[in-house]
Structure formats: structure tokens, C-alpha cells
Image (cartoon, rainbow, N blue to C red; front, side):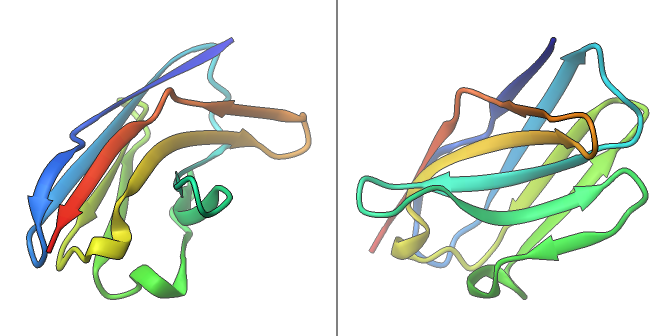
Length: 117
């Protein structure tokens, strides 16, 4: 009963920046974890970054120092600021919301990020 809509994907040159946003709507539990995952035809979906409603963050080692996740609990949005992009960052990025203890896990449709060399 939660809908997630991503925006901000596109084509960017290596070294450039993009900002992804995700807006959640529906029956949202206040205590949740929102995050970003990415997937390519060669790799299974992997965690990029996540953030709890309390403010704790988690990043994949490959993006530490380059990506920053933030969220606005009042607006039910989460943002991923991606700097110093590399071609290997090219993937479909999915917004995710998880509610611990309730077996609730929601996904957006995904937004394509393409980084050219």
C-alpha cells in the first residue's frame, strides 16, 4: 500500500553529478528505512545507500565519499546526491522502503542512470 516514484535519472559524463529523488505515498509507517539500490544485466540488485527515519545511514563501499543520501520525513522523500560519477555507476536505480518487523518491502519502478566515458 506504498507507492514509490523516482525521478532525476539521465545521461551524464564521467565526473559529473546527478541527483535522484524518490517520493513515497500511501500507508506509510513512520519508522522505516528508505534507500537506493541499483541493478544491471550483469549484476544482481545491490544496496547503494540507505537511511533510517532516525537518521542512520549505510553506504556501499564503492560509493562512499561520492554519494550522499538524505531524507525528509515530513515530505516522505529520499534523495541521493551522486558526485564524481563513473561509468561503472551506470545502472537502473530503484528506490526502496522497508518497515522492519512487518515484512513490508516496497520498490519503485526504477530510473536509469547512464554515465558516459
